[in-house]
Amino acid sequence: MKKVDYIIVGQGVAGTCMAMKLMQENKTFIVIDNHFHKASAIAAGIYNPVVLKRFSIVWNATKQINRLREVFGDFEKLLNKKYIYDFPVYRIFNDEQEKKTWLKKATTHPDLIDYLSTETEQLNQYNAIQNPIGSGEVLHTGRVDLTNLLADFKNYLVDKESFLDETFDYDALVLDDNKASYKNIEANRVIFSEGYNILNNPYFKNLPVIGVKGEVLKIKTEAILPEAVVKGKEFLMPLGNNNYFVGATYDRDNVNYENTTEAKTYLVDGVKQFLKTDFEILEQHASIRPTVVDRRPIIGPHPIYSQLICLNGMGTRGTMLAPVMVDDLYDFLENNQPIEKEASIVRFYDRF
Image (tube, rainbow, N blue to C red; front, side):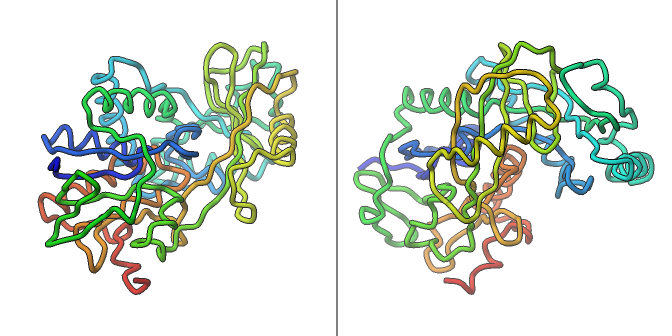
């Protein structure tokens, strides 16, 4: 029987950050994942402290971005590759009232002054982009290349014999005296970071995790475009080599992994509202985001089986949320520190 401190089920962005944290703290672990339709693997990986629909600050934005840079910087050092790309986010204004609201918040709102620029004409030099009223620039933004980071870190764990590429078998999990055994592995705790698949987990299936299907496109254009995210009806993000990410749809009614022509048409029409140039569609992908009814993560122990831990519900902002949520969870598990109330699983204990 192999003994470890932790088993981590799921190697999305949260499970990956948890594994890095445990490794840095000299804890032993095994990650189990079959890499089936992981939302993190196709996510844009954008970090942005502002809700672009309402021009409001994201929950704990500054703390999240600061920690994000540290954690994903650690991955760059460990794997000797670049994953963090800093560039601005431009929000194209729909009308003059939006522009006035933006400028007012950029100069008077204490939480937003550091993040909203008062410049509104940065996109005017790009003939392929239509923005007659201008655009607002969000500062301290960029993306993390999650697709390559997750794959590279998996290979690293495989080399360290710390990864099992398989579907987790709940029937093989044996709970005993605050420990857990899975096949030939014994662990002090099992962390379930399964994303939407947690609804198939017999221990956590009653949590209010809501699946939201998202479809995205990868396109190619020879047009001269800014090294930035451009957000109109949809958002356009540079991937290098004239390739761009377009996304994303939000479908709560058809929660599956199938690509649809309807979503492709929706995304193409959306990006054409501001991108006035030809482009080629290279790829289309679909996955399911794990969102929560109150738009906060769910972390902490099962109310009966304390050795079973939930790390879930990162939703559409997993790149920003995962590093700080992992810190919170680790401090709870190892240092007996309280989990932030808004993210604690305790708020849903009445569902068990």
